[in-house]
Length: 102
Image: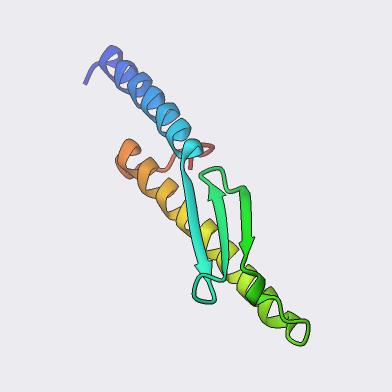
C-alpha cells in the first residue's frame, strides 16, 4: 500500500472519529432505580444532566435507600453512555486503539 493511500485512509478515519465523537456527545442516556422512583440522565460526554426523584421515594427514616437509588441510577446512566461511546468508536476505528481517541 502506498503512503499516499495510507494517509488518505488515516485522514478519513480521523474525520469519521471526530464525527462519531460529536454524535456521542449529543446522545443522552436515562436510567432508573427503585422501580422508576429515581431517574438519572447522562450525556455521551459522561455528564449527569438531570436527576428526578419521585416524592414517594423520600423517606426521612431511610435516607440511605434514597442515596442508594440515586447512586444506582447515576452509575447505570454513565455505564450506558460509556458502552455506547465505546461501541460507536470501535465501529469507526475498526477495533484499533488510538491513544487520545478511546
